[in-house]
Length: 342
Image (tube, rainbow, N blue to C red; front, side, top):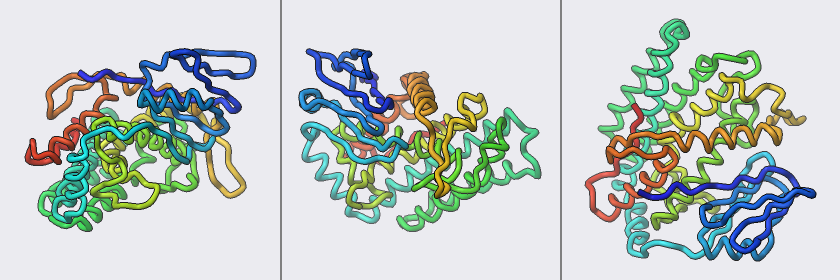
């Protein structure tokens, strides 16, 4: 079993990180905290965070990825050490990405996982809160997503897969306001807005998706895949397409459910956000720490992998899905098995 490594999130502005022997020393004003290097696989820095060159060098040697984000969570760039992995695996990955048929097959399976998991989120919510299904909208959407899954089994074209994904996402997002049980007058959702987020729910979604994106890049690199070369998300400078591909299965059941939980349990409140003159909405510093803690806690929950039939921390699912994709690319299994949450 692979060890579940940790990600260190630095959100306090003006923090300075340095290497002290085999630890990271975090200097914040007159305070200093230390963390061992040996059990880290990533550092995420939000905003004005400084790192010593000796720490950056140590991270490169030990395979610890450093990601830089704006204070509001926009991904800026990352530093990693030597490229790991098998060159033959990457050559086969590039070959598959160049094939429209194979790309459509892999992308179709990934979107099957996304729509299936979105449907599972709605089914579980309907079971727990049947009184919220006014006019039968949740039931109708569940049926619609089930039809989308049937269509995915029949389509051989990548553009058709994208179309089905878009229709399914629109139907699923249309129910977001129904899934918000508390503070609904302050947390409303009228559609996905990204750069910048235009309401509190979108601000939360963007922030959690950014954390998930970082973890998916690490998962791809840890098994030797090139995170930039995807099948659903095609090549674009500065974009890690494969990481975005693998994220799709985890958006509904992991990221979206975390957002609902934070709002419905009132761990995040309306005053935790600031609105710019442009209408953009961002979280303040302390609430970001609350979200990060909840994200890390969720990753430690134990779940049984539906394909491997093994119990593992939820955070290891990212690694094992990347590993299963490797097995398909190598020809060890007939198709890529998406993660299906029931």
